[in-house]
Image 1 (cartoon, helix red, strand yellow):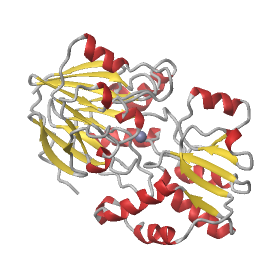
Image 2: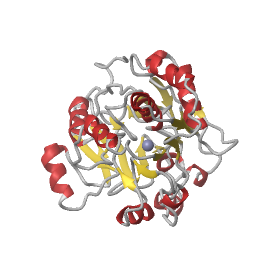
Image 3: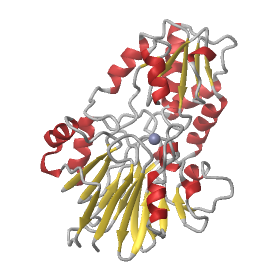
Image 4: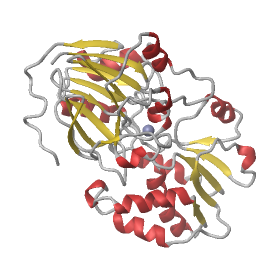
Length: 365
Ligand SMILES: [Zn+2]
């Protein structure tokens, strides 16, 4: 089967993810992202409306707002596919169909393979067995301490999480940098289903080592408990005892370290703590950072540059689209250097039918 791929959202910068795949008379949307900050227009939803494009299925990679937050823009009759844990973030009452956490299924006549993306609780990458294979990473990371990353089947086209651009600092260096903040009382706002879980483990160990009081938001503790209910193979090997030990440890009565789910907290809300962000900053928070009111030290949760290239190699991709990152110069030249002739900055791509096998030589871990 041939396919036409249009990156309606998440192309050319960080924003609401939405990838339209048209193949064999069917229309599938990969992710239905919502606005990351107030005032952001969901251009992907406008495009579908203006062109009166009906969808046969929507597949959601994970439950972060820029991937799932636009589901309410879809007609209620559009079938939604996601893993059971991700479904908890759908609008109440929304009907959905289950994607496997790691496996294969049919969606609108297309063979879809999923695997662990290493980024969030219940999150998966998606592989469509059309036109020689289309791989969409969603948000992905090789470096998580709790979430595994599954090696995907071969794919001719790779749509990859390039949120970090050419950044390539190893996670161990990020941890060393965060350590320097631990001598101050710290408040760390995080997405509760993402890096929160591995940060909780690390902070628990650092708090013990330094005799610091730690408090972890109930929703993060609940997600850690949920992770323990999943099959062992959906966690990194050896992490189970660390999670059990952390959950057995109650919150300190007067904590100097707080890990909590991000609800647009500002520095003014934490007068006794240093507010340390570890991920994407909205424009409003960039202004706070510039004013010296908050601090920023990345905790890796996306593919860094060398890992993105390794994934493209592993897929055997002929064409690679870096998503969620600027494709203006000099970035375009950087990607061309990193990916060679595989790199493309085209929003719309047409892939002819291919006899190249995208599944036959691959088996699930
Ligand atoms: Zn994410």
